[in-house]
Length: 237
Image (cartoon, rainbow, N blue to C red):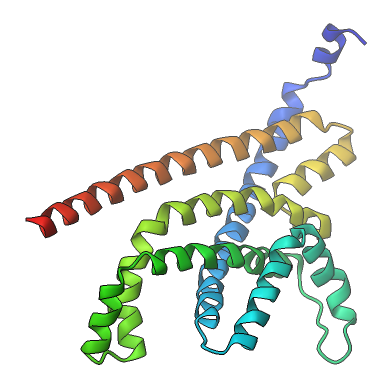
């Protein structure tokens, strides 16, 4: 088939016909991304807190579980939770595709986010920890007044990068029936034998949204760096 014949396969009528469908599915994709990211942020704190428990067998077990989750492909985890988990005796339960996506992506990426939290916490000077001990801070006051305010701002850009990565991993959930952009384009293509227009739109949406997000993260990073330099200058003065 010549290049001219291939170009004739493109249909602007089909393009504008499937565009509203994928646009509507875009919001479902964004919603799942935000929910999964929020779950990952919260569960990342859980992993981080558990790793600071002063009992080596327990922390070794937590590290093993985190490494297992990180080294297992997200698609395998999605399949397990959707197809295998309902068959587990007594505790098995059938989740919807949306919940499966939120749990699997949230738990999977929470193990990476926990490492980001850990790097932020370990960057706090030792003198700060000694000061809170001397002031007899409670554990809650120590984390809310000293640790988190200092550990979180420097790692916000890295968290933003993981938000973009999770956004690009959401199409994996189409394998279990989540009606996001990819599955809408696939279903439309199967019904009308027209895949190229829908999949092109999906690719463009991911490109544009990821690019916009990366620009916003870069601006946030620059703003935080300027704020950090001002604080350092004020402290030196």
